[in-house]
Amino acid sequence: MRLDRNFANGRFIEPASAEQIAVRNPATGAVIAHVSGATEAEALAAVDAAALAQKAWRKLPAIERAGYLHKLADALDQCAPAIGAALALESGKSVADATNEAIYAGQITRYHAEWARRIEGEVIPSDAADENLVLHREPIGVVACLIPFNYPVYTFMRKVAPALIVGNTVVVRPSNNTPGSAFEIAKAVEKAGLPAGVVNVLAMNHASAEAFCTHPKVGMITLTGSVDAGRKVLDYCKANIAKPSLELGGKTPAIIEADADLDKAARELVASKTTHCGQLCTAIERVYVQESVHDRFVALLKRHMSAVEFGDRSKQPSLMGPLVNEASRTSIHAMVERALAAGATLETGGKVPAGDGFFYPATLLANCRQDMEIIQEETFGPIMPVVKYRTLDEALEMANDHQFGLSSVLYTENYRAAMKVANGIEAGELYVNRTPADPYQGFHAGWKRSGLGGDDGKHGMLEFTQTRLVVMKY
Image 1 (cartoon, rainbow, N blue to C red):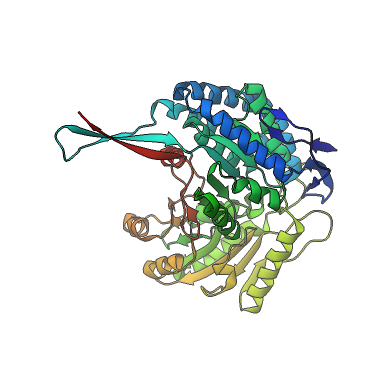
Image 2: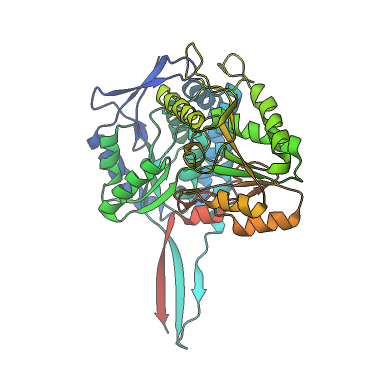
């Protein structure tokens, strides 16, 4: 059984307390590892180490920081089998999928390394003839990175790489559900030879997390997580007026117009909903179908959803894997039962299976209404509710009648319909005739309760900067 130690100031540290965090394999429910829980003192010391390291790190030319990031990307590639093996055990993913996630993490690291010569300020015209206004982009300092359980390896570097390239240092708190893969990344950091204190990785309980997030030297907190977690982070930010960057809940609507390629749409929606057991913030969460094709499309969804089998992906990688824990399964099943009680029709799934592991079947619910909980609240599981609509305006109104605004989907062959939705959808992303996949050169940002700030691309990199205006008379 694994026993992981925290990584701070360039080394794996001996634990200061006996507290250990148990990590379970969600496909079996068995404990597979223990992680040393950082004490508040250890968490605060990691911030101090990051703050000290940042003084020298920020002074390096950006191209030299890029050199370290390229070395880290190479190390991630070399360590991908070990990272993938750890992630597969703690997440229920197949080894191939988990290893590919490590490779993608290396790719986004290289992408952000290439910003080294492109971190631009501005020269702004002054009202005075003998004066220049120059806007500089500067690092913030120490960034606290709070990582989710669903794609913890990719999200780790999605946050850390842009933070580092602009001159920040980081303290990373991985999810307590998936910490083993984070410590394998820490080994890659060590292998790449990054200066001590630039990247620190510590597992911890909520008390230690609050202590380090409210440390006076933390200038920014970036989180991918739930709305409730986002509210907690905003509370942490109050202590030092730290900058928040929050990617929170999602309830991706998919609008299916009558002229859509229904077979393609059904296949892709089901694939989105059942990838990693629906535990993606941009997975399809509600489907609006034009009434003239509603029955046919529900039949197609049912056929594809019914064909999805679940099980231990370490034994059969083609299966749909488990939910993260029993609490998640209990919550999701209760939502399905309440939807049925409110009038939804169960087309397939909807039963808690017997046996080990936190599995739940692909579940299709028809005859749903806009006011139902299953439409209004995020499930974060393999549940697909369907609502019928008459006109595109009605569908767009229902898609926008929501607390979340992260991602959205439209299937149509009509460019007028595409432009109407592109100009009217209240979400940070719209995918036309495909399902979401977060290109890392884009900008992944939510509206409404789906977050503040965002990740990826130029704008995601600039999230990790602050500005200084220099007004110069001559």
